[in-house]
Image 1 (tube, rainbow, N blue to C red):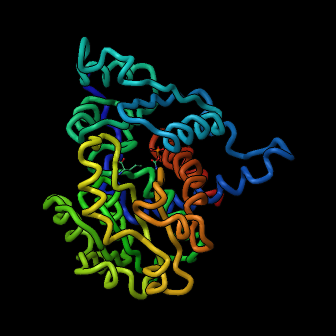
Image 2: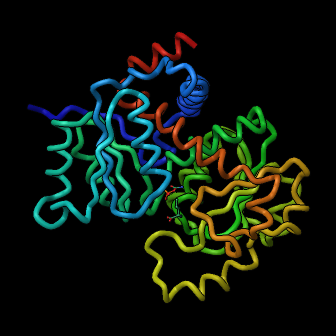
Length: 327
Ligand code: CP
Ligand code: NVA
């Protein structure tokens, strides 16, 4: 039989602005519905994905992603199956294509945290069920949805909003932050080092043309930070960076470390974000990440609510529409 086609989310470019707003609305409703669960035992979404299985494939380590996927599926009445590439025949005795076909017969969705976009794309090409990127070398959409939910909670909307990203520019999270700003129509200043791939600029420029967003690389850290509403940073030592590279990277990125002095250049109500894991004394000082402007643990919690909304959106679109209708 001809393979069924499924909707995948490999980067933020796979969603429209309206879809993202719908997902955020459902994520907020899911967060709200769960608020009193430990007292009442009631959550109106506790059977939304009953009978659904999500395969979660990991080639790199994880805390937030793995736990949010497993807890999220459990809270929706479904299950997540943790599958480590280290324990699998994938790439050794079995091709990624065959893996995708087999999973399509048993599960309703796949998340994959793999080293390369190439591996993710080959999986998406053959999968007849939705594939969600759980971090490759190119994007991190699950993180983006949680970040947007956090921004909405603190700022109310994306109007007149400027974010600054500081640090490693040649980076999966940076790339998706650029796409997300351009998609949602807010501004993004970039301060850091590294060559941003041309394909990312092409995507960002096309989206920004429609939304009016301005995404730009600033000459200095001070320029990037001045007058902004939110400062975001990510690890200088992404998963897979070799030990020998660490010293040189420390030197390269140190001028872009987010310090309390730099934070003073931003708006007084500027929030500080980091997708975590974080290293105090590297991409930011302890004073900043543990200080009053930091919202990093709200961001981490929102990984759970955002994941749940995206899972329903992709795996059970009819139910998602019903939820939207119910408000
Ligand atoms: N932010 C994030 O993806 O964290 P993990 O690597 O712990 O999943
Ligand atoms: N850029 C980081 C993100 C971790 C969530 C990495 O790839 O390790």
